Image (tube, helix red, strand yellow):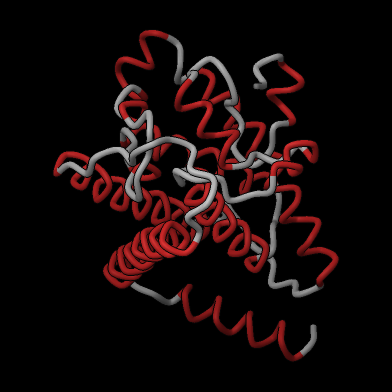
Length: 240
């Protein structure tokens, strides 16, 4: 173990000693920061990249959406606390590897595996009964705004989190890989719900789930269920 890995291990030991009240505060603070970061990123791109609008107007902001977005933050905090519980009880183990090769492979694996799981989860959420009960509120945003990413039913938010926790229970990912993946997830979700194209048009040929790709799903709910990539939509015949 090199010096950097020893230092990372020390941080993990410090977190291990947190009380539950400290973990509750920590998880809420982290998720509020990520929430504000997403909103800030959306507004920054929207103000500096005025080209290629996908729809004429953003979805109007409502108090209801604001309250739901805060509930999503609370649910994300709950998922984090569940992960801590599983970690403290030995169901989840994380490594302190800082090997660039391992981290890259683990991040790619998380992106592809979560993309596959989210494809099926997302597809299932469009079944008529489930859609009416859970997912319909999100699709009221045919056009989008900076809260659209967070306008989700609590069961959806927790469901996405549980899929991530299941993967972490199956393999000892590096804490660095997990952190990078979660940051990519937030940035990708924010960019995916922009109301203007962020990626060059040729990115579609690289199986990347571009802003246009997800925006089309908000306009045609029978297509484009993937998140990071269009691989599974192309494979299962739901790609547009």
